[in-house]
Structures are given as C-alpha cells and as structure tokens.
Image 1 (spheres, rainbow, N blue to C red):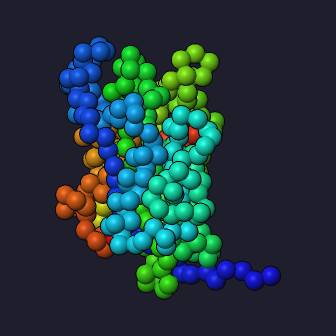
Image 2: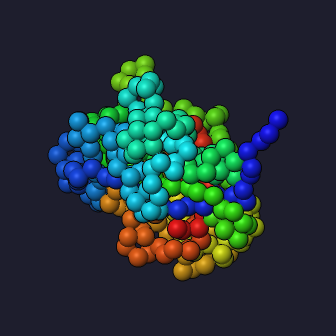
Length: 326
C-alpha cells in the first residue's frame, strides 16, 4: 500500500477575519437589562461587541473571513484541499457549515467538515489541519472559527448578554518542506468533561446559552496557564521566546491572569497580550484568529513573531500551540 508523502510540518500562510457592522455598546445593553458600563467593564472588560442582523448567516461570515485569508496569502482557492470550520453555533446540525464555506470561497469539491470544540475550536482545527498537511493528506487547509452566538444568547440574562458576540476568523495553512520552515508547533490539548455542565444550552427550557460564570472563571484562571506552558515546551521553546500571547478572548480578567502566570514562569515583560475582547466581545472559536488579524493590522504583531495561542471553553475543552505569524 502506498501512502502520501509526509512533509516536515505546516505553517500559516495568511489570516483574515469578518465582523458584523452593527455595534452594541454597554449603554445599549443598559436599556434592556439591569447593568451599566462600569459593572460590565469591571467584570469582563468589554466596552462593545458586534452583533449580526437576522439575515446574516454563520457561513456568510466564515466565507468572508476565508476569502480574506486567501487574499492575504496570495493563494488561489483552487489550491485548497480541505476546509475545516470550527463552530458551536450553527442553527442546525445538518447541513454543516464547511461544505457551504468551501463552495463560497471557490474551493469546489474539496474535503469539508465542521469541528465543535467551542471556544477552543480554532486551536483544535489548527492542530487537525496541521496534522493533515504533515501527513500528506492535504497541502493547503483553510481553517476558520465562526460563530453567531447572538442566536443562542438570552438577551434578558445580564450574565451572558454582556459577553457574547458574532464574528469569524480564518487562517490558511500550507506545507513547511523543511524543519526551519515549520510554523505550527505541536498541540497541547485536553478536556474536563466532569464539569461540562458549567457551560451548556438549556435545551430543557429556553434553548439558550447558560454559563456558570464564577466556576468557569476559577477553572480558566487555574487550568489554562499550564496548558499554554505545555504548548511552549512541546515546541522546544521557553516562555521567554514568546513574542505575543493570544488567548481566547473570554474575559479580560482571565486573559490578564494567564499573562501574569506566564510572566511568573519566564515570559518577557514586553510580551504583547491580545485584548481584542474590549471592542469585539467573546466570539468563541473566532476570537483567536480575529484578534491576530486585528493586532497585525494595528502593527502590534509582525511577520515572523512567535505567537502562543490557547483556547478554552465549553466541553470543557482546551488546546494551545505555538505558531509563527505569517
């Protein structure tokens, strides 16, 4: 039996993102639920978020982000071998998003599947895509995190309506033919199914998203920094080698806690830390690639920077890897 020829690994070739134009500020939410700007900022660090209109679909946002990543990479859609969409907010399980997205970006007839690891989804999908390339199963894989969380939020629940938002973020992965070109490190991942109920859909009542905020906060601020450090170690690096930390944008206090623990373990004081949540909210699987796209556009991240990505959320699932900025 003949197997596909493996390569040294994978690397990011391009990135892109998509957000709705409609901005919902904290002042807007004050009109609906008992909250205010100071309360929201002190607990989650969010000033505003983007919400899609009723006619905008999750695949549409994913297609826009995917096209942007392809344009950034300068790669024609015909070169794509597979599309992986990380999402947990499709309105129905069938049809999946990925096949629609593949057709939408012009990659007809390619492998396409969805992956649900919630807020860790982009890191999971990146690991899967990188392994597909390394094994020779694919040469170019379009990985997209896309969420329309507004469809699943109870807008009268002040504990969740202040947090979540809609967006898509994408990365095009391609082959690294030599070890020096490898730009996606080994994944460090896992799950905590024993506390899965802390983030769930209340299918027995409202069919809306429910989160036990304090329990999730305690878990994330204790369990995730070690995952990030494991990803660094698996890449053969030290915390001092990391130029930019991009955690899932769940809560600014969680982001800051993870950064503090990494610095205590040797990360540099000048390590740049993503804070996209302030103006984008929590967009689940879209948050990491979108934060990277926004930071690069703002000049906070440069080509060749060593990035530490770490996602965590419902499942509970978590994953991280070191990547090189394209």
